[in-house]
Amino acid sequence: MNLDMIIMVLIFVGTIFTLIKYQQKSGLIFGVAFVATYLTSNITDQQVVESFSNQGLLILILLMTCSVAIEKTSLIRWITGKIEGRSYFITWLKLFLSTAIGSAFLNNTAVVSTMISPVRNNSTIPASKLLLPLSYAAILGGTLTLIGTSTNLIVNSMLTESGHQGFHFFSFTLVGLFAFVITSFVIYFVSTRLPTIKATKQDFQCYLLNAKVLEHSSLIGKSVTDAGLRHLDSLFLVEISRQNKVISPISPNELVKANDRLVFSGDVRQVSQIKQFDGVEIVVDSSSVSIENMTEVVVRPDSDLLNKTLKQADFRSKFNAAVIAFKRDGAALSGKLGEIKINAGDYLVLVTGHDFAKRQNVKKNFITLSGVEPNHKLTGKKQTLAIGGFLTAILLSAIGVVSLFKALVVLFGLLMFTGCLCFQDIKQRLPFNIWLIVGSAIALSHGLGNTGVLSYVTSLISLELTLDNAFMFLVGLYLVTLVLTELVTNNAAAALMFPLAYSIPLFYGIEPMPFILAVAFAASSSFISPYGYQTNLMVFNAGHYKLMDFVRAGVPVSITFSASVLYAIYLFYPVVEI
Image (cartoon, rainbow, N blue to C red):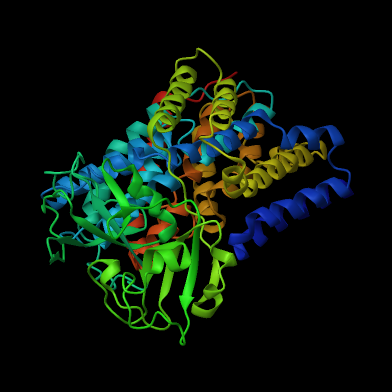
């Protein structure tokens, strides 16, 4: 081995071991590996440009950015409204299938994030019985299509960089569907044996929001569940105030009536979700308010408002502001906001007029914390455009009318032009970490090829690959990737193992596609560790699981999924010579 080869081996091996120790800093580690490779002149300037502007990588970034518009619609919330059933099996089945189907076409992290709230709010089934299957469903669903998971898109980007035409939209579907069906039975079996973990008491130190059901609302006569009021993201319906009667706790079958006051508890930034319901308005007393300019304040100990209700204090005219949300530590609050007497230290969210900050009495009565930026949701024509545009782009690319890249470029431009996406959305959600990982990994693979490391590793294989023994090598490749996935996360594992999966079979004149599929599926099969996949970590915290809960459930699921995938690859993508 020459000096350049030794340096590249040290960079590659060092990257793996550093990822194992500092798993959550994968972007930084790949970035350092890229810089080291570039500074040692093991890749060219042109290869650097190609690595970070790879079409497959741009598809991944465009898809994740355009998915933000879908998250801003009520589509996923509508899906979550259909999951509650009369029995554990029916609820589990609805949750599992809806999550899997959603994850096949949408960002599975977003799907799981939206599903967590209604699962935790389910009053009949412990969340611990459903949250882990929720993550597993998202993982399985993501393996069904090219866009289902970032792992598939990462592998596709590296494949196109190697000069291959890349995967088609449904290249993963046969293998993924075969494994999905078989593994689902095992997941249900382990789900029934998950521990019943008593949910901690909901944190009611979040804000209370009041809304009113108007007389023309289409929700009137529907149950709370059918109306979708139990399935909001980060907002929880805590009580209904009806003709001086307070209903709490609320039965899922409670019917919504005209003029009901709905009291929500949760993240005030999600207040715009309430506007998506027909005939439901944020109210202060009997007046509707706009939520564009919001400010968070704390009531001072010497405020003139103490022990007065908002009406008694003539709050709106005094401050040119309306209170839409209320928080008081250590006290249970109920009823209309206008009837609650103000205490020192109360937190209020105000919708303010243009001269609020200039009024002399503001500093005397409040400590102003900050402006509160609402997370705007899409409604009406914009919602229809976002959902219709996304589905059309995916459909046209799936049937081969246009390339996925062209469809997403046009969709992105349309969403930006119509205001469905804004620069703030892009700034907040641009997947810079994934872009850095994939671009650096492609550059790293160029370095391994340029210095002859890949050829040297191939020559070290003691048994020459033939059609008779190639499948055993495929199994070994799958298992190594599977272990790496649990140790260094799915995206990093796929990026590290792709060069071997592509170059070694090609060296022996064998079609590399089965080996690449093995890496893609193995990198997506993180069932044992809560840290190997983003959705696992989300439900791990939300469900208050222990590490051994994941291990006990994940081992049989992982074995079943792996065996199913390997058999399906053997069946549908047999190893052949080029």
